[in-house]
Amino acid sequence: MKFHIISDSSCDLGREACRQLGVELVSFYAALGDETYYREERDVSTREFYQRMADNPGIFPKTSMPTLEDYLEVFRPLARAGEPMLCICLNSRFSGSYQTARNAREELLEEFPDAQLRVMDSQLATVLQGLLVEEAALLRDRGYTLDQAVEALAPLPMTGRIFFTTNDLEYLRHGGRIGKAAATTGSLLKVKPLIGYKEGELVTDGIAQGRKKSLQKVQELFFRFLEREGLDLDWYRVATGFGLDRAEYETFAQEVYQGLLDRGWDRPEIKTPHQIGVTIGVHTGPTPIGVGLLRRAVPRQG
Image (cartoon, rainbow, N blue to C red; front, top):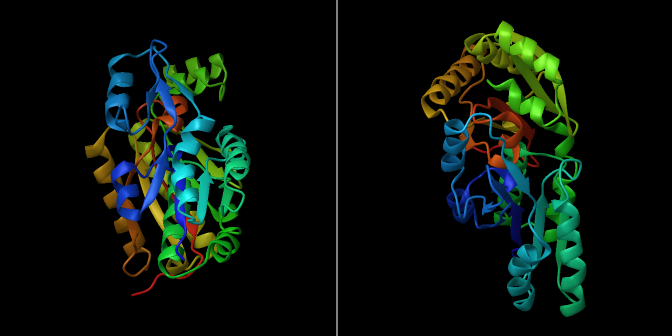
């Protein structure tokens, strides 16, 4: 019996891509400038929310995690039908979404004692969580049982890496990632932060002078990592992600693809663009852009 996959919206796959994958999406909430919270990818699109951020500089957004009822709304019909379920949540260090899903599972089992539901802390965020969800869908479609899929997915989160930058240090300051003095100095000097994600944590990868150089440096860090680790990309999913500026992103993505070709990787596969969602965008502003990769449970075919 095929299992059903549920993810919170921080996977940044978007509602349409999730529909095509056969994945149920449980929305985070986001607000900007007032107390009206919108369900991400339901009441407001990511692009619309980013545009509001860009149009209202100095007003910082807030997010709220899905509620217990939000999860139960998805879990109950599947449990009633006797369908196995895998729920993949944002890194529990960043949000209480995982714990809320676990609490919803406990309540569900009181109503449906035989329900088959595994709740997984992805230990990942944004495009990496999305890549894990895609790998789960692949395993499901290849006939893996729920337990087999969970076992195959378990070692993958620690292989995830992201290299990215953002244009506005004030969002990082507001979110407590850097101090006010550092943000002010950085803005005056026009330096941009280089940020990484590895082993479930955000890390500092340095700075670059200006937006153009920061995008080049992100690519250099990515290529250097691939070469240093000697990775076989047939065993990895690669994705690029961005915030608001699609034209800037298209150039960046093409440069990443060409860089892989130039370094001898044959037919590199880069997943369709991930628009980095507002769950992460509250900390980066509307200008995040970067590249990430995650090991596959099974190698790419063809």
